Image (tube, rainbow, N blue to C red; front, side, top):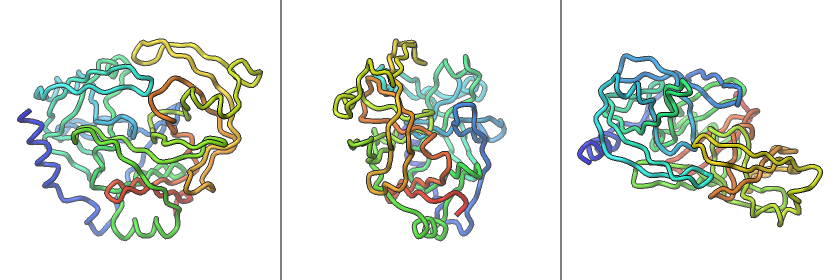
Length: 291
């Protein structure tokens, strides 16, 4: 665990970009599922492209790249996918991982064989932004590293929702807020690694949705972990932020499945917006893109 202790000390000693005078923007692209892909650098010299996934928990790098930069083993972390499967990730410390101006020395990362199989370099998580508010502007396709001044402007122009954090031992970080799911409410994970919203099966009855209804499509498949999964696809009249109902998707194409959270809100909810994640102050700020 020596490498983990070193990582935490580096993280605490780092001066946040939030204190800098100028905001920095990094352009991103989206894949066919709408997920955010940003340029990054590994070990100071290796250019890579990574998915910015606020539902990932921790950074994950392809095994081939871990080997290439001589990553040092740092134990194991056990987490759970939203569908409940246990996921054991080997941890490594790599010399450096950077996205735009955000640089992590002796960065603690996980690794997953599936990334090499899918030809994905890696995944960047919300954990990197514990001290640095950032914005995903989905219309202009910009990742913005906010300053005090620009964050204040975001607050004045946008609407805010409380952000809840699921922080596991300083290793993983997941983000939640309260949403209205039709006529019900739930505490939902904000997951830019999911294309659309997924709602727990237990809400179907309270929302008056019949699994066998003519407007419901049943889908059976195997997920990325290889486990069987059943989803029921339908449309909700509205999916919205509880504290800011004007921020909504109406109608919302969603699926119901057996998940461990009330709901997971995917990237499609934000597609016409700019959403700011202010983790230090535990606020989610939503404004019109480009404002």
